[in-house]
Length: 162
Image 1 (tube, rainbow, N blue to C red):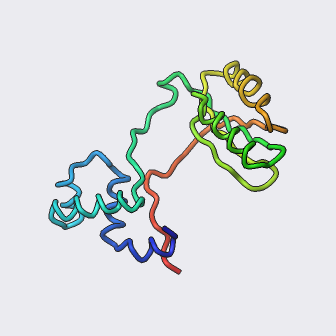
Image 2: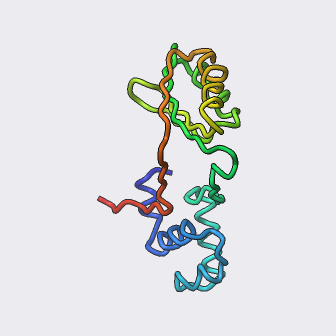
């Protein structure tokens, strides 16, 4: 579903429901309905429709990576050669299978991919880079940056129609 289609489908009530669920996905349907000024059955139907159409893609718990023994985060920027579908697919599958990987993005520019890693310490980071990234078929070069701070907006609103 394209962006233009979503903008026409999402009315102010849908947007309110999405924002409220991003704020607290564990709230009861009755509480959500009260905030939206709807009957609980109507609210449940709207949320299910947002899920069915892929507007709401899931729910999750945010965790403190340090509490999981993964206090060091890094972004690894990778250049691949050759840039074939097979090389890229195999690389992505390999990286996604690593327990240290918490995110992967394909990008444009000098590098082709960014891998977001969360590890225990610099020794663990070095081991992943040397043993699990640098030697993968197609990896031409990699560059690593440590994350001092990571912020993520808890609520992402639809952009206004132009």
